[in-house]
Length: 477
Ligand code: AHR
Image (cartoon, rainbow, N blue to C red; front, side):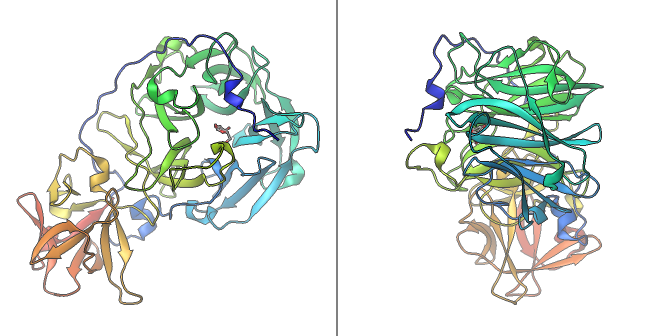
């Protein structure tokens, strides 16, 4: 079958967008900073390995509900809806997957099945998804399934509530729903007649979990260069309400390495149906990163980690740049999770899509808790004014089998480690081994080669020295 260029089907003139900047400021340490002797899962906040789930694009993880996280996402075959469940985010990686709905062999909804989301509304589960038809797999429209059963993995509970009809009978997808101040909203992507883009984002009030009750308001249209690479796309909206604001992330451009995320922000007290309430960040907030080897990060959602505090960014990315053929049919958009940080001004700080590997950690000396260990490419600094989140992110990597040592790997320079070279501490390609000693006041990092020497800090630099109480102990966050 010739792969229809689903986004070349629409013609017309582009509309103007609204742009304004958001302030940036130095980082703050996470409120959930570990004290060293708590289990890693608590300290790290997001105790997962990336990728979390391979070949599951457009990932959605519910908030923890009755002690369970539930996952759904697009499968490479685009032919079915699947759900997984586990008591932890990390547990979703190996959890069994149930098929809760399959597309019909022909007719409506018999085409591509895309980007499901699982929401609990009024004590019932709902799956919002998009589907084409068997005679036109790209005649994509939005549909809703409903289940009254407590476990969304039980196929027996699911029945089709129907299509979500909007102002236009056109290409519409990526529905997400959220409740805010007693009102429920739907945000979705759609091709609006007379606007020459593949898809823009719209918002409307909902009167039932499967229908909208107000005219669509266009929130954003792809106009900036990072939104129109390959295709003119704004899609995959996700909402997080924090710090008196409603943050709406979305994805833009073709689904290859040029795919990236943008951000709209509204005051939590504003009229969310008024387009003027929303400010669009002029630049993308989450993009491909060659050094960590993550390409086309996007179609995100948010959840909260097991500690009940740490916000988690859930998204997909590939671990290679070049794709043969239509990216839509490349199966390797993997589900990934990482901690979402916050600037002092209350705006989200996405950082970089971290590479493959285990939990991410930041280190602060117990006697200087507002400072963070970070690098400038070679030196290891210990200061408050960290400008680039990723320079303060590290991973503990287990040493030789069973020797109990660990090296400390840079996240944004994954071929570099905290090294001790001729008695000085630097960021180099040599992975120095440490013993991580847990205790009631943070952890100590003792040099494996010299048990009398520990990581410590002096005049804003990470250095080595004898055990010296809080100067040689670190909080993890
Ligand atoms: O992954 C399938 C579709 O491709 C998703 O619905 C959309 O967000 C993406 O562009």
